[in-house]
Image (cartoon, rainbow, N blue to C red; front, side, top):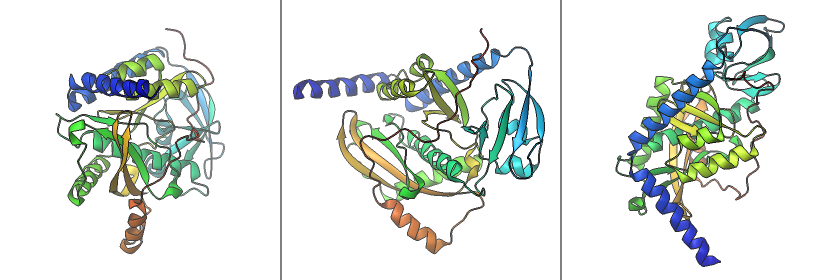
Length: 335
């Protein structure tokens, strides 16, 4: 039995490495982004006629405000553009009929809409989405941080609470880098790359897709394909949530915030080696961040950074996130 398990581990690693070897990291990103755009265009074509929906705004100062928007085209972000510049810049996430909803995800029905910011009385949902987004941004950085000749396999993002003190991104590097240990300069370089993405203020583009589409997008990664299959099995309608930032496409178990520019202070603090796994040497990169308009004094940041350097222990069995994005009540119109 043990021998069979070892053989399966080797077969998976070889299959994943062989597939990835056909394309460089840059080519993989371009391939996935192109398939993302293709599916995005297909979904938009499902709404050939303009149908109006009523969006009733909730929340302080907006209670009872009614907007007439376009079904399948308008998003919560579109709604903020009918309000004030503060709403456009400060809204990080939305609630549609009480369920978390990404700011750039199209509205498919008449609904109640609540805009969430980091200054809300109870920011728990938006804070967790922010932490998840910081981890996804770290994955974006690591995916392009190494030379194209080396493969980078991003594993399933651990769902880590803000109270853990650090967000995490697990990965497996090319076997030729098994002995690599990050230096302080490496960490500073990762941080600089993240800050450049933050400065660009790139949107996180959401896309809800079928498992078959997600499997095609990640056809060069057996690891990601397993994650797709797992998340699709857990989803009520068998779909998977994808997000794109620039040309980087990732899978997420919960909503992300609207854009990278919502980050303020951001630092990659460490990369821990977790030992051998079925995919290779597993590593856990960790970081620390604060959102826009929330800054820490350098002494407080130093203390937070020291805590964020400690390995975040994650149980082997992790419950699904408490705030997954809502799934549409009504299916899209037939093709």
